[in-house]
Length: 157
Ligand SMILES: [Zn+2]
Ligand SMILES: [Zn+2]
Image (cartoon, rainbow, N blue to C red; front, side, top):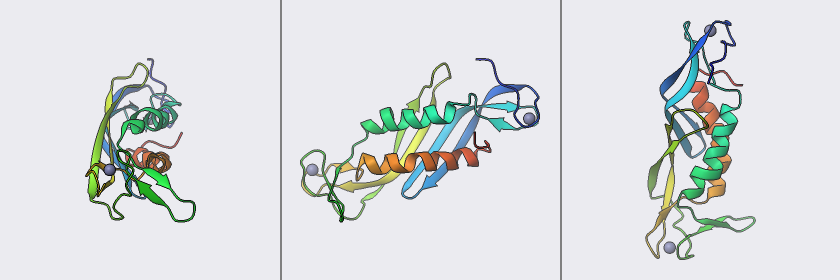
């Protein structure tokens, strides 16, 4: 992939990696590790491709988060959550925060690590630990990721 010119100073950029940057939205913390960015000699950072943030959000929501253990949300006014394994109602209070690590490979970029940290709830019946629901983590993902990009010093696209 041919790096773009710097959007701030128009000089040439090279693909490099952000060591680590994290962002939060409500109960979700997202940390990116070794995420590729384009950087110029003056240290300005930008996405390697204008569509990178959208592709990453889509990848996380559609593929990575879809594989996480998660309960099912029920109830219209008062929400309650049921175990994906046995259907029992999950404990109302989270057990602890758990970090799920995924390796993301987008198009022709080298893979990098994304850590998703959220409270997990224990099923009182079968003991399985899980998120309240996928809906919840998916809802917070775009905002937490935007905060992580901001922490990495990448201006919004
Ligand atoms: Zn620059
Ligand atoms: Zn269960």
